[in-house]
Image (tube, rainbow, N blue to C red; front, side, top):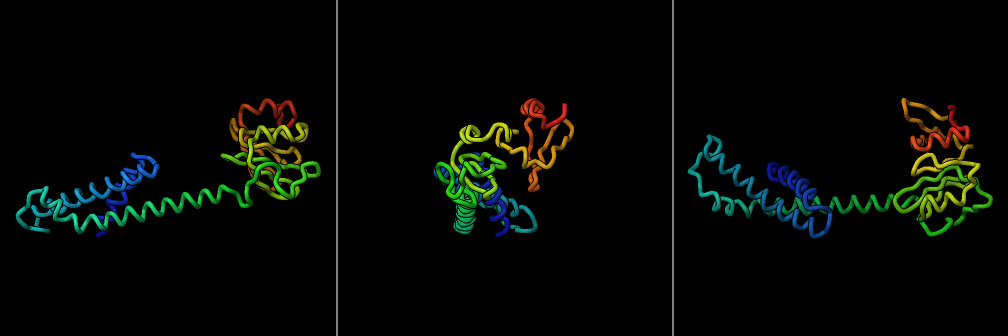
Length: 208
C-alpha cells in the first residue's frame, strides 16, 4: 500500500508540472498518474516473481498489469483526488490571504483621509497596494504609479519597484556589500533597488 501511495504522489507532482495548472491539464495529469502507477507497481511485483520474495512462474506482463489494476488503480485514484483537493484548498487559502487582512477596494479606502493622513509606506502587490499610514494599514486596488502621483514628493521616495517610503518612517539605512536596505521605525526592512540609489543620494538619504 505504501509503495502505491508513495509512487502515486511522486508521479502526480511530476505530471502536474508537465501538464500545467489548468483544470483539463490536471485531469489529464491525474489519469496519466493512475495508469503509470498501476503499470509501475505491476512491473515491480512481476519482477519479484524472479526472486525468493515471491517465487512463482511469471505471467505475461500485459495480463499481469490488468490483474493488479483492480487493487492498485482505486488506491492511486484516491491519492490523486486527495492531492488535487489539497492543492485547490491551498490555492484558495493563498487567494484569501492575498486579498488582504482588510478587503481591497477601488479608490481610497474607507476611513483614510488622504488630506489629514501621513502615509508612511506603500507596498505594491499583484493587483493591490498595501498602504501604511498614521491611521493604520489599508488595502486599495490600483497601481503604484497612480498612488505615487498623490503623494508628497518631498516627503518620500520610491526606493524599489514595489516600495514607496516616507523619509520620516526611516530609522536607518544599512549597507551590505553593494546592496542597501531601509530599516523602518516599525522594524520592517525594505530593499533599495540599485537603480534608485542615485535618486536617494540627490535627496541626501544616503552618503556619496
